[in-house]
Length: 291
Image 1 (tube, one colour):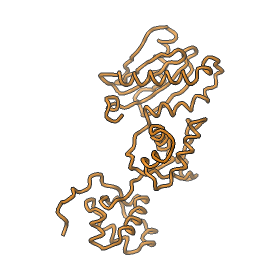
Image 2 (spheres, one colour; image 1 turned 90 degrees about the vertical axis):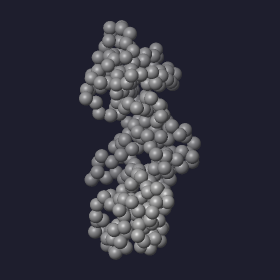
Image 3 (cartoon, helix red, strand yellow; image 1 turned 120 degrees about the vertical axis):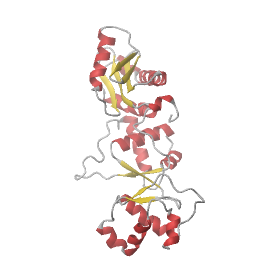
Image 4 (spheres, one colour; image 1 turned 60 degrees about the vertical axis):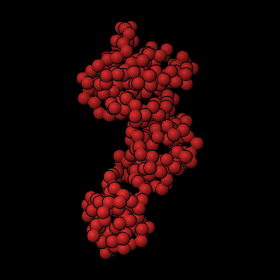
């Protein structure tokens, strides 16, 4: 999906609304907007449902609202302004059609309870995840605590089958497996794993890091905290002094010299503590070594 036209603009909001009564069934805010998406959606729905007018696209303050009607629901997808909304429309049609197919009986015998529909967010997030990830990234669980109440915020979509699948993925997260390895080892579709990862990231259940390689390049962000200096002593200081945003870990091992596994162990601790960070562009292989 990263190479398609639709990914060049940001998805801002997606919602499914019942046609007969105008009740919102699912609403997924993705990113901040300069206008209230609920007000935009209310206006569009008033035109469609109560004025009985055909409306396929609506433009408001730089945003495009793509609209698709099903038999029971109306789908609304708000994106940044684009020249061609056809890729978004095609996806929205599929989302609406699958939703009505999955929940036909509940929609016909409407009881006003929208909770059973929340699990369908997983299907939507397979099409438009909150974000996409480098498959080489390693997710790590963040512990919930009173000191950081924003960590592990409740995931509203974690109900029914979606919750079961989410629990499966949580079981694979051990701080060592990459997203790609979790995809390979689980029985879920790759798109489901990516959607669940985007949920866990959105609601701060995980942090993401990379697996340190011999050619990884790190840069210093801040001075090491005293407790780490107390654990590792002068070796830590010497290591941090060699990390300049240009040298690979293998080059640093040559200069010190330290054992590679020991360097990776300490470097991982420093990354977790926010002392070090990755440099995205490593030196070109074969470049002249420092003297």
